[in-house]
Amino acid sequence: MVICRDVVENIMDYIDNELDLKTLRVLEDHMGECPECQAFVDTYKRMLDLSGKMKEQTFVTPEVRERLKNLLKSRMKPC
Ligand SMILES: [Zn+2]
Image (cartoon, rainbow, N blue to C red):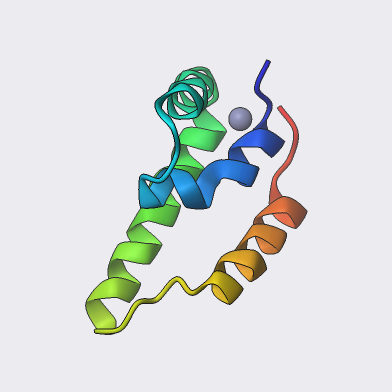
């Protein structure tokens, strides 16, 4: 069973489309049942999109990914 913490763990890969199909499906199933996660992912996608438009070079470096993951973990509330 997927909980919000799992979504946070995989959110970067999800957005980068690097997840395997099985994990992707599990995450999407959870988001379908969890409005908070769905809204969170939408917000995060927009944030990355805006950043990408402002910078020509890659915005999400491995270091940035780790920092964002830690930030998300600290903010995410369990379902
Ligand atoms: Zn959730």
